[in-house]
Length: 297
Image 1 (cartoon, rainbow, N blue to C red):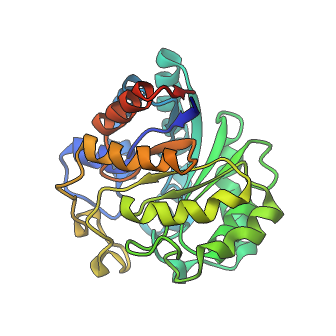
Image 2 (cartoon, one colour; image 1 turned 90 degrees about the vertical axis):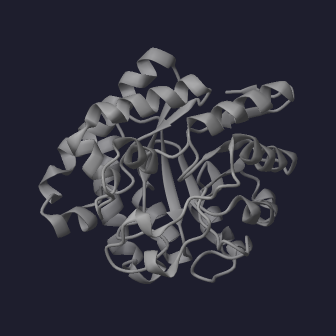
């Protein structure tokens, strides 16, 4: 029997799908502004499915993203909305809250990341707003060593556990989306000492090779993959909308659970889902874990 931490699945993409609205460059932030109660429903559904951690809808709440649309001054209010909805769901179901920290400017775009010292200050703004009310910080979708350094510096004095989630190429789990070897993260792990190291937002088929690289680091490790066919060139442009990406039709809850149980076999103790992986996927994964004799914590 293994003690498994079960993350939730997609937050931002699930919000966009449930809203039924046309995707915008603001992504789930727009939905949270227009329909904040929908966010609470998403968190509650994941807890009910068996997740033990609620990930805040703060992935895209960086000043560098919001100032382009005149919403930089709204960051404290938006963070408050995200935290309050996660807290309400936790109060009903129990569990922990992870403060999400996404890329500063765009996902899968290591070419856009600023110098790590500048990045650290930008991450630090969001960390300061959230740290009194989250149980841990989850740095997500890190696509280069430079991006990892900036985010880890920005969380260095947060006095909360920090989990680092890296994204690898869709077809080669041994390389970050920057093209750098995933193994190159080792010195930063040693220097900044995050509590856990994960793989996120890539095809599940790429995860096993990545986990084999993370395992020797001596940290709890795991993965939460996405359900996109792949990251398209159209999405790797300025101000993309998520409708440039296509959802897979062959990754139902049973198929996703098959992948995730394979990760457990490689030593993973933290599991969940990313974009296009919803509550039904998490419920099936929880069922499979319990059936195999594992304890969800």
